Length: 291
Length: 298
Image 1 (spheres, rainbow over the protein chains, first blue to last red):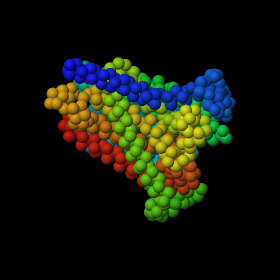
Image 2: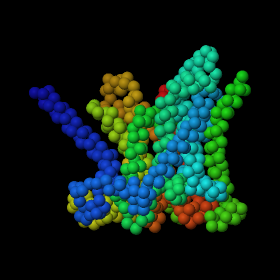
Image 3: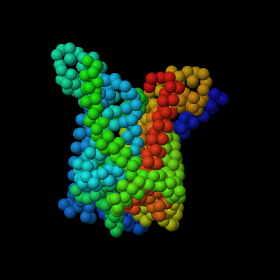
């Protein structure tokens, strides 16, 4: 009798726990997902519906008007989104490519050779990343203004290459350390030059890791705001995150247009992050764990 | 033989070193120098005037600077601690899931896919006192009649900024803690159970110590980019209203670019840089300690 009772009690407790768990999980997922979805939803709604008082909870008319306006040559409400998109693409792609090449050389050197004070060099590299973007932007602004490369793609690309080098080296070092050095040695015994051994044996093995290092670098450039907001001044070089603030400078904020632009910035980022997902943890912990 | 090898190493590293010296180290030295001058963008000659520590003395005597400094520390402490706690909770929640764990993990990473500037925009939109969804919902549900000034009131604005920051970065903690949970060895857990530990005791004395290095990795990574909060604040309030949400970084931007006092802004920058380095080194040390305590080659 007593035994049966406690059994029932245990079972109810378990069931209550399970329901509570699912409830908490559901609320958490909602908090994570809703802000993004809200912006997406509003990018499809006309301005008067977004601004309506009392609020319209069930969308009455959805359309791609804000997106159409965005890809108009004139731009959405005077904001040349397409031009900014082009700038962002040029800047992010070039700096990723260059950072990757430099990082490849540096990362390989770290993984394959021993030299004095290697750990300190590594820590030093990491510390360059602690410099707040806005603090770094001040001297860069002064120097670049003097050199006349403010508001050019070149200036921003140069800075982004430097920003990405430490992390790229850190990642690529990790990927090469996973490849046994014997493979390259064997290839060299078989008559390859070190250069050939690298490109024919080691590089293909590290390729997927290097690709994800590239994606991380691209995302950094794509999302960067603090430095770009000072070094880019006009339509010639402004990137998307900087351009987003153009909307707020106007008299009434165009929430619909801004939402559409936000979606435009987010979609490539989401796709790319999705691709490197399995590297995300190892990418974040490399170096930090191995030290 | 050894000599050529060292030459190769140097050759391979030199592009990285050259770029870093040119774009980061060099400019930082220049900004250190200019922090000792009264340099103003409007008066280019002033770069040659050396005034010693006058900028620093003025900063340290400035109430607004201290207010921003303290605010930065408070916001960081609150945000980082809550991110850690919520991240731990989130990781435990996902780790318990028996179905669709992979999907849950992907959803968990969702906020990381947004750049801070977008997160700031999202929350600026949602917390807007007139058309924001938060106030609209509160009013429709009849909880309040008035429009709550989320981004205008001094405390509420800081609160809103913290919410945005926490929403953005909790997943960094969650994902790393989850990685720790998934690599947790089963034996100590079973041993604890056999020895009659309660669930809480097992968690407190077995799971948590094992997770500590992962927590510190997350902290180290976060401290590397704490200044990203600049983006969020800049788009949400711009440091306003009346500088009441000003953090160190927005203050630097305003002093340097709006007031054109570059020398002064560079002096502030150095305080901000030292603060960042302090945070990073602090957590990096903790990380090494935790790793040694565990005695495992993680």
